[in-house]
Length: 393
Ligand code: MG
Image 1 (tube, rainbow, N blue to C red):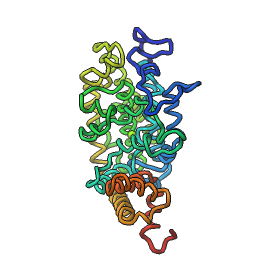
Image 2: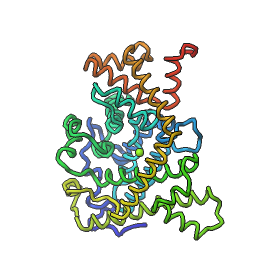
Image 3: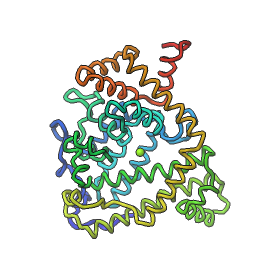
Image 4: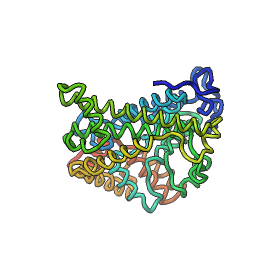
């Protein structure tokens, strides 16, 4: 699928309203430009080489790691988002490298155990400014990664960081300076940021259908109540009546992703054609996002989301795991906050540094950084080492 190049498209294939190195607002700390790569390729490469990125392999969203090897992890999810985002970016003549960087970084700040972990940590941090995974992703790339001699964090471009911060409360936005501005003034992020956000939705809705079916928590009959699924399922059954059930599901999921991507590209092209943004500044100034689904697809999407919420995310087996996960996170936070001496040297040094700067709030923030950075299995092991007298420390 490709669309005709808009007028003003550069020889490199970028539309005049795309983000490019030339219009980037640059990095937090000045650095010489890369010699062989674009600025956004450099961002992507730094993300891939970070410790937080490697840890995504052992963090999960719905199913905890030990439930099976075939389920998505945050790493495979992030790669799927990057694939979908790049396809959309290419079709719209937008900056693929930037969308890839945003996609690979968008979940770096997630706690272990998916949303159950985030909710538990947010509750622990209630008195100390709360915990929000989006802001934590930003914190990881701006502060917590320690890999470079000249600065803390990864020193990514403004545009990559803008894409990572998908949403933000007004209170937090006012503390964030230029990155928070758009949440206060109602301006839009780049089209690359807008599309990566929706690529994330396409990816998780589709793969949660796939993983939910594989886990046996939902079945094809239930899913057939949902128009988006039923349309694709009936088409596959009509074309391939003898296909094995598992392969039928894969074919349906593939088509689910494809029909959403096609709808998104076509609708966004229409939006762009009618708004006619001359450049990136015009994109930012537009009153609503230009990347989006058609009304019809949005409705069908919502129906699928609602289904997944009630039938999958609230399934008692998922809920049991979430309840256990919440307990692990609360216990760890409490133990470390009350006695940072229980923490490994490096993490304790981080607590001492933040406590010296921000008092009790700093101490809580440093403990939440440590807990949020854990993988599922590391959190389970730490819980045993801290609470179980029979376990080695
Ligand atoms: Mg995601």
